[in-house]
Length: 263
Image (cartoon, rainbow, N blue to C red):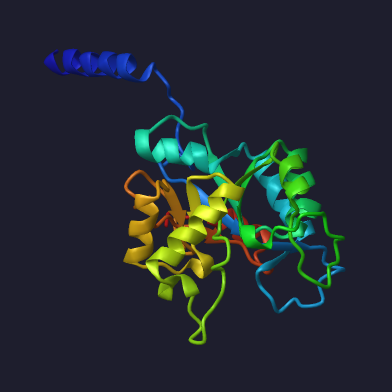
């Protein structure tokens, strides 16, 4: 009898505190999968299939269709931040889709596909590469989203920081962010945020160190994303968040495994 009274009391308190919100997070286990994409091309356009980061537009659509048909809900980095900070409720089967760099192909292919399924995504953009005017899309060269395209696509995309002019490798093959002076990093981040106001960043090449994390914290960044494979949960370091890259050879079978992985 005492156990029943305790259980009832606990349930009553829970309802009062949460408003009886029974939504679950992520895949139902409290984990959020953050997918990482870069560049999209149609299979017929891709002449360099050895570049694993170039995902076919056809496969991307199959993946989004699978998410849609299986009840997944896309969230923004803003909502993820609120979940991690305040444990704010998220829709059932929430997932965050991200793109790095800000290629024109994100606008050309990802934008209409995401819009078709009512999805959102976050683009971590290198603001120093944003052209003033739209560039013609050419699958044989890299081009970037223009200011006009960024504004036009905000109904689908949330834009965040991938630095302004520090997305480069040094002679040792390491991100220049690691070896830059503190003052230069701060100046770069502030310049980027003047163009794209945000509290979120993805590390160029996924590389970071304590100095960079300290600067992000001091500058008011709330989330920073790596390329370390894994899920995100409320115990995650908010400046070292995992993502799961999607590659050219990621089959729909592999994609399903990602979504259901225990990590």
